[in-house]
Figure 1 (tube, rainbow over the protein chains, first blue to last red):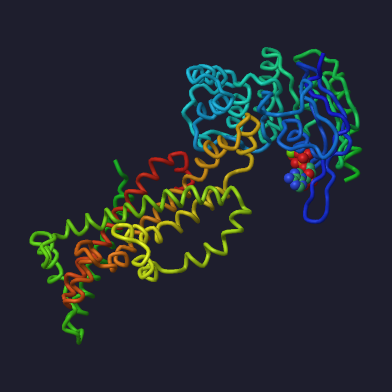
Figure 2: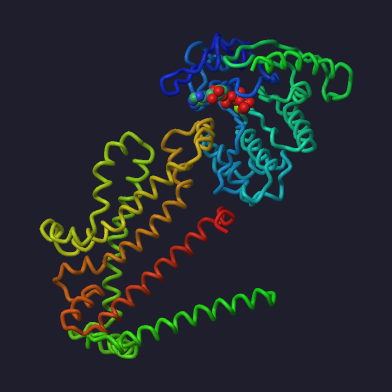
Length: 253
Length: 264
Ligand SMILES: Nc1ncnc2c1ncn2[C@@H]1O[C@H](COP(=O)(O)OP(=O)(O)OP(=O)(O)O)[C@@H](O)[C@H]1O
Ligand SMILES: [Mg+2]
């Protein structure tokens, strides 16, 4: 079976002025179809950069990236990307934003309304269809972005710290919702976070990245059934293992 | 019901506005009274001239309304050409910084040349209505161009990347992200451009030939040393400019409901 995501010794350098910054160095990993993988790594290590490479927004400096066997190209594959920053179109309402992906993906006009409403309901925003982004909260905006990404039935869901700005309660609610959606829709998810507990709660596998230039420091299989209890001893022991690896990297900064 | 305090504040600001208008007229009256020149009309004679111009018309028989309509037509034509060139060129220059760099040394000095200075050239180069259109265009084009470029520049990179991950090509990114995102700036440029274009009307109508237009009216009566009619023309230009501006502001408010919070 083809891997959903395959990276082979991928490197990325940025030229800033006359100096060059090596952000990612010979990174190799793969993600299986329908797998939920979390990537954790210290701030500034290149996680967002990695997401830009995987979604085909930027080419790697060297190495190879394959998405279901082909180089990443958003015009050929369907990506559901949820950005770290706010990415809603401020001039469109909630439902207009959800329709945006459908329009670009060439869905039939007559289907937009129905599909958009289905996914707005899925993220629990029914009743807010005609609100503008400035009229809803930060967490609601993230949910609109999630609905917009899921509505196009993506081959791959890429999420960049989607719950970072949420309060603890909304965050854990959203995490459970995401797991629900994932088990219902059977999608491949690459989820970036620097919250270790979040990674253990969500992922089947956790990749810990080193500090810049980043490589995979450790891959940890989380062999726990869903839904996971955050206070159970095995959960805590996974968390500690990842935290240890994570802290080794933080110390070097 | 509006609360008493707010009502009071409204009444107060209305009174202030009214008193400043009254002060203005008193000041004007005083200047007319004590000016050594016999050609400075007082507000009353201007009012009389205003009514005469509206009802009887000027020495050639054209009424004030007709002058205003002719001027409006000229300005609107110039404005349409200005918008139709300023917006697309601004989009293009905003999207292609290298191109912008290449044309900046031409555009920057050009925009400081006042419309009046273009009159001889426009007479040599163009004919008929095109002369007016060209001079108004000079006034409209640059504010529209600069604001459009500024709007494009302000487009969020995240939004562009987001559209790309949904498979948008350049055309769709421009049409669905960059253009709507810069529309508030574009509208602002259009509003300023229409104002500047309208202010160019006197310069444009200096070209001469036809005896109609508010600018023409002013020039005609300036030659006759009938300053009261000149002032009638000035006031009419001011009031129409104000109205045009108001209508575009109203349109902006309707169009950019999603921005009300930022504006407030
Ligand atoms: N377009 C760019 N040009 C130059 N340098 C860049 C660019 N994008 C990112 N970088 C650099 O690459 C490094 C990694 O950035 P990136 O945004 O990928 O980090 P991150 O792991 O997502 O951090 P965080 O957890 O804080 O979001 C940073 O040092 C940043 O300065
Ligand atoms: Mg990041």
